[in-house]
Image 1: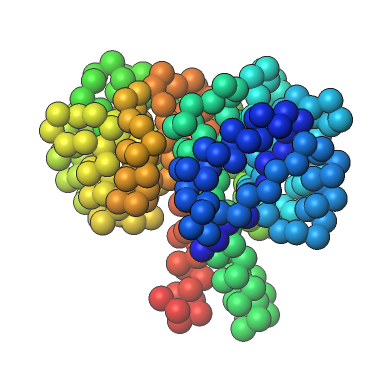
Image 2: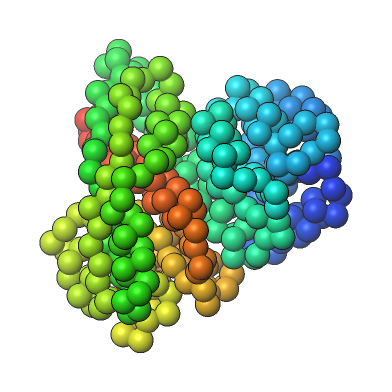
Length: 317
């Protein structure tokens, strides 16, 4: 599958660096990615009027138009396009505003790391693909039955965190066991996948379990259908990629997140190819990135399950 990506930044050097890294990381030369780059957000909006993009990466600070306003305009024209903001200046209040207004999937800080950029793009494209599948299946369902399938959603989500470091387990478990303030992000993602559908306001509650043994964690996933499994990359008993690969075989619809401060882009590519991870979180993480990644993984999982159920209802399973 080929993906079309639009880069928008008033700095040519930034655009060149983004193009170079994306081409290197995702093999644009092989035809997997088609990349366009523009320095003017107004010109970029004119471009998206007649060209469909899978992913748009925009700078937050641009003199002609800020990134949030640009992505709000993009959302109106192409609601299915995944959106990533680049910025070294954005603050927490602006992050919440941007999510509410534009449904931004990820923020990547300037200067970015190879891992942060590759992880954000991997996650955005994975989400873009599952939304496209959902659109296709839902339309086929309507064509056959004359109405949309009934949509349901969960309220409590079960997370498994696997790390040989007890301090990490306590920190992640403590963060995800608190009531999340990012239920609005799920609502934005839900409405983008289901235009016109009603979804009552919800407060996210994560039921979090922790495990220091990867082998025990695999056994646990055989008994429990976790919504998300978060695994450390470096563990003496088994690395996180092998663990998440095993989880994928047992529970293919579980969101899989790799957590590490030691992995590189090569490891991320391996994790995508072998374990089909949803995203990568760098250590040390911040609470916003952790919770946002988990909620997006849950949204992805719910869409995957919904696509399967629609397919089964149509006799495609």
